[in-house]
Length: 145
Ligand code: F42
Picture 1: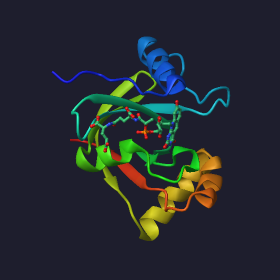
Picture 2: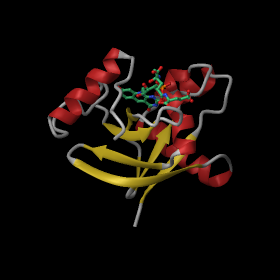
Picture 3: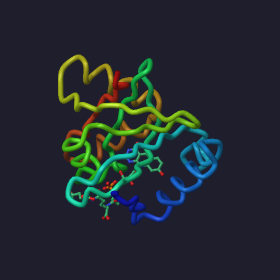
């Protein structure tokens, strides 16, 4: 059985702990911004370990937009590669957990639309993109039927 391995980043691991141990009633926003966060449970592409990644909640109907911004860091977050390899994830949104499949949306009008929704939900993404020397990846997560 694969083991859950918490993020080495303490504030991230703490948020996951609080969010999950409270059944999605606490720790559901980014610090004190009041902006909602989801938890994406994914599989490590090398270790097979269970990883839990909090991300801003960007909803598009019943789907979610996942933005691999990592605060505008020069490199993609490691979870990006995990999702490319293992696209089936669980997404917790407060007290609801659903199995979803993600796909990267790399270009075109679909990406433009999703990026606009993401920036609307979390305006700093725009600044992260200006700072980063890479195109910030965008995934669409859709419920599996
Ligand atoms: N990050 C975002 O990119 N976008 C967001 O919208 C976002 C919002 C957010 C809200 C709240 C919060 O608490 C955190 C938030 N974050 C957001 C941060 C996000 O949760 C991640 O911590 C961040 O993006 C960095 O992701 P990362 O995958 O690069 O994390 C690093 C620190 C990490 O966990 N590294 C692990 C380690 O042990 O060093 C690697 C874990 C891993 O997946 N290993 C793979 C495996 O097989 O197990 C191997 C992967 C490989 O290819 O080497």
